[in-house]
Image (cartoon, rainbow, N blue to C red; front, side):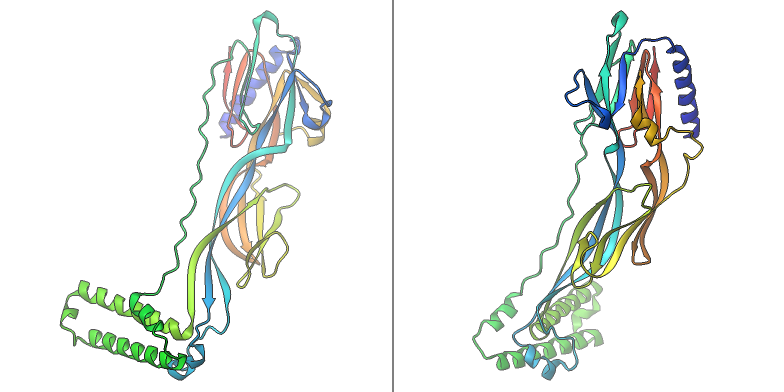
Length: 361
């Protein structure tokens, strides 16, 4: 990457010397300094890195059984659902990045008179991020970029009661009678499992048949047990939080997580804090880039801005415990630089703002 940056920088320096006497054909101004109603120009922006955090959460809905008052009589010290509630368990967090327009790298370009048939062409995406720019005889055709389609995760559906259980609980018997019958069913199933394991069942000699039969008995026992202890219906959901790292705040609190409230975006709510720590790896510190104040206060003739993105170590923390850690590109931590234009075409990486191709005529 350093060799590519060095070659591009040398080419840009040569162009700067060639352009010393050239008349300004475009002027680039920071967006905030544009006069309202100014015509004969367009806006473009460089992309900033937005972190996309997908939190994978197991959401369990607890439903009290009408037979709960009899559970202790038949199930001993088993865990009984005593009231309706929802519990949450944080399973995983997945990090990815999305490019979005950077308001601190938004510029307005005005066009002057082009002599000698020189042409100017800006190719800007619908969201304002620049794809390419050409000035002079190096202007060429552009290639459209296909949009990226995000896939939504599948959410499992809670299991319904089997036919046998439904038939039992709809007989109209009292809760006491139902509790006794349910307890008897559980005892029968446990005996059947014991006979299966001990080899008293002939079909148990076949491993596949044994596995299938045992799994069926397990499911039946669990279903009847829920009639006494209550139901626990679990499903996996994904909640997404977007975060924009910045140089001024290396650690950002983005959410809170509670086992009883789940994930709450922002600093409100209860539970442990979810924070994002962004540590620059200083891969661009050797670049003598203009300051942000210089970029915002001056007009630049026959020049456009591009970016050399920075590498960073990004961590997602739950309290002080790391949930995820990854090295990734964070554009806005890098350097903003100027590229001169004169019979030149520049092609930008729309995810980083870096110049990926330079064509001189």
